[in-house]
Amino acid sequence: MLLSMDNVSTGYGKAQVLKNININIEKGEIVALIGANGAGKTTTLRCINGVIRPWEGCIRLNNKEINSLQPFELVSLGISYCPEGREIFGNLTVFENLKVGGYLVKKRDKLNSNFDWIYSLFPILKDRRNQIAGSLSGGEQQMLAISRALMSNPMLLFLDEPSLGLAPVVVENIFATIQQINSEGTSILLVEQNVILALDIANRAYVLEKGEIRLCGECKELSRSEYVKNSYLGII
Ligand SMILES: Nc1ncnc2c1ncn2[C@@H]1O[C@H](COP(=O)(O)OP(=O)(O)OP(=O)(O)O)[C@@H](O)[C@H]1O
Ligand SMILES: [Mg+2]
Image (cartoon, rainbow, N blue to C red):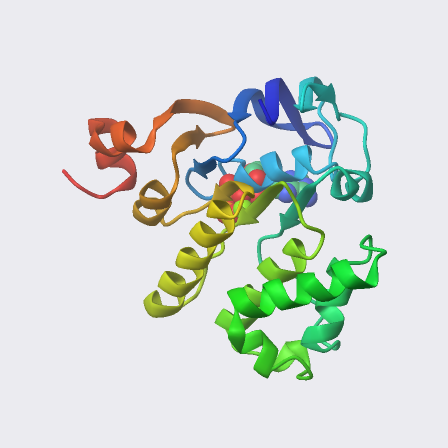
């Protein structure tokens, strides 16, 4: 097991958001986390990434507890987080944004090969490497946000709503690249409101409702479930 959340509960201040969450990710998988607005998807990612702490329960990476680690410590252990809303540095160039993502990579050769890898995944970023990131299109900014998270060579990548606000053709391109990143060895936890897309590229999925896991299973099975069809796929 690469990552496990066992009976994790957490929230903000005194307000509980997540209740007894159990999620597992095996090496090599794409796991989707789906659910309505406010279900607690981003909170789940923040909790694994050390932005907020579990109140109860245990988070393990390769069977070692990581409950109390800081976000930068998790990056050095191979977890990388591409947040909702991208949060790129708008006044830095594309190149500078990527350099920030690779700040833990000390060897120049490795850093250079990471840049080559990113530019092969998203060639448009190479063309625009000296452009101020704030002036990129929405799709290019999302590509940059994913790429910045990849600069640390994560074994586990968290993506929070990579399709948000993007045109279908751009989403198609980004999702094809997410599959390529996975096929090259990075395991992925994907938060998506586009359920059709998420179930299409993931191996397994968890359905989060009001802070609790309502359903989980293989995507093929979930897409056939009446409940998922009615509630998330708009099929009656
Ligand atoms: N910083 C915060 N302080 C207090 N409450 C918060 C905070 N962030 C989120 N919440 C609350 O936690 C609940 C879950 O929010 P979360 O952002 O995890 O949902 P989500 O599933 O990611 O939703 P969306 O699809 O809209 O991104 C919501 O009720 C939200 O209001
Ligand atoms: Mg969210």
